[in-house]
Amino acid sequence: MNAIVDLPQDHLNKSGKNIPIYKERGQREVFCGLTGIIWLHRKIQDAFFLVVGSRTCAHLVQSAAGVMIFAEPRFATAIIDDRDLAGLADAHEELDRVVKALLARRPDIKMLFLVGSCPSEVIKLDLSRAAQRLSKEFVSKCRILSYSGSGIETTFTQGEDACLASLINDTPKQVAAKDKNLLIVGCLPDVVEDQFKRLFTELGIENVSFFPPKNSQQSIEIHGNTQYLLAQPFLAETARLIEERGAKRIAAPFPFGIEGTTAWLKAAAHLWGITSEHFEGVTQGKIERAKKSLARYLPALENKTISFFPDSQLEIPLARFLSRECGMRVLEIGTPYLHKQHLECELDLLPEGSKIVEGQDLERQLDRCRADQPDIVVCGLGLANPLEAEGITTKWSIELVFSPVHGYEQAADLAELFARPLNRSMKLAA
Ligand code: SF4
Image 1: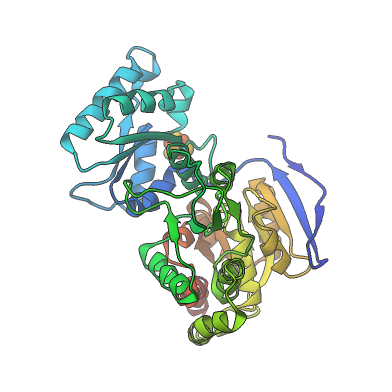
Image 2 (image 1 turned 135 degrees about the vertical axis):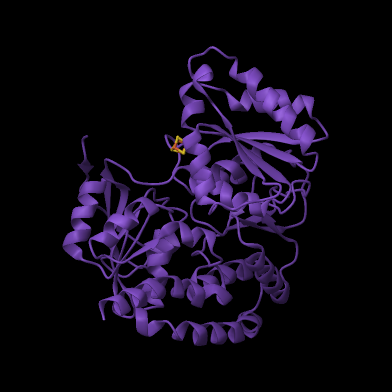
């Protein structure tokens, strides 16, 4: 396989710092977009995710879910078998049968996502057509949407982007001018959403809503007077569709760590004309508390080296947090995809000379990692075991998406996610 390593494109950020961005193309080692179902099904509480895929897809979703046993699970796989692959069965008819049986048995499902996979793409099963056809039949009972979680098209966090984009496409366009509102975009655990809601209220920012909503019946307000803040850095398509409806993105770093959270809140506060005195009055106590909690983990992290393998697209904001607030030295920041506009404020905060590699050529990256010998590597599950066997401490990037890590109250928890494996390795070595 050809591997291409471009010369770095020097990215001069706003503060004039030089951040070289290398591009690699080659073998990738990432999860597919089906993984997003694990946090999406917890968030949208009356939705069901039906993967149209193979037994491999079913195993992936089940093992990513930690082999949870539910009385009434909210995700499943309609298995494409040999007859479907050989073209002996009409896959559309089969799918209609499965969906009808599911909705007859589970009238509590108010929104059904048909999730495409590699096999459904290979047999060219048009799930958007199936969703339209079934929507007509179940109109007023259940909204039926589709998106692709296939590994051919998506890395694991892009599954959320594809899902949210399908939700936007299914939301009626609002043409009439409405009052100014703030939309927070990206899945957040309920506990974090509630904390941010309280913070916006204390700041005096009214009319705040979160997308995706907890309930499929909740209306989503997007119009020319909508300002939106991204809570996750991997929502390129969702952001594009939101902007197509006239909403404007508030440029800010992402709310990871104390500094990121403060800058994220401040960017919205500024637009709402909140005074700095009031902003500080609301945030100061929370910042002090967060700093105190974070301090517990700093001895384990300071001056330790870290490298990121490209996986979740959270790598750049996390590298910024770990270097600026935890004193770590970041050797390499791999990211599957770099959206320069969305990450501009983050790039601005990275230390001078930080090395970013966009894309992946696995073998070359492993060689660099072995040469660098970082104290800890952030990578996907598939790489963690082999690296651990070579004596390199790892952190699973998927855990950083599952766990509540945004906001002031989670800043210390986020640091702990890195401190824990480092402490464990130190104890083992001792
Ligand atoms: Fe299914 Fe493709 Fe994901 Fe494998 S990579 S689990 S075949 S969607």
